[in-house]
Amino acid sequence: MTTETLITNDKHKSLNLGTLVIFAVLVLMGAVIAMALSRQNQTQPTSGPAPDFSFTTFDGVSYRLSDFRGKVVVINFWASWCTECGYEADDLQSVWEYYEPTGEVIFLGIAYADNGPRSLEYIERYGITYLNAPDLGTRISEDYRITGVPETFIVDQNGDVAHFIYGVTNRTQLTSIIENLLAKEAIQ
Image (cartoon, rainbow, N blue to C red; front, side):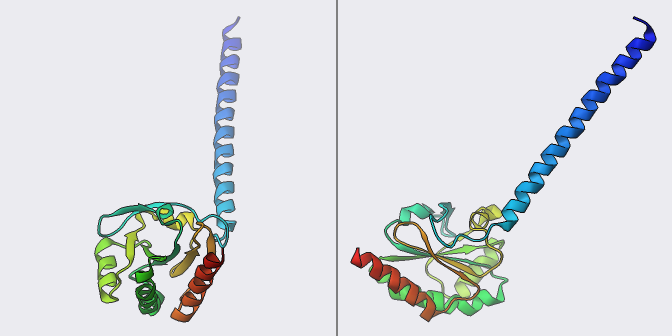
């Protein structure tokens, strides 16, 4: 083999390896973009199994959503900086206080993209006594594909999403949904 042949062969090898690397990077980028677009087109779960998740409350107690199977669970995504969240805070607390003694309903507030001290100030300002937890890394919000706050999911006794409320909820609406779920369970 001549020196010229060796140089030509080396160029083809590096060109082929370089082409493969570029091709692999492009395929990977395409897959990432496709996944992002697919996720962007997904909407919040409005029926079917509620995404299960673990959380630790601001009081330091750990739970899983599935720990509350057999109860109606109201999951409210909120943030201290959200004006609309403040509009519904008193109604959420009031409905919680009504159902708390029955033990059939659990309320869970998830602080979305908020810092601890501001979240705790919000909880204190509105006198919220139901479970509240930070959404560290927004992993719970991502599972529920929220698009903003407030958003509320009502999970039935079987662990399925029964209702989704985009925006501010109120006492009448929430009580009606909960009563229907409790009545349905009583009939079964």
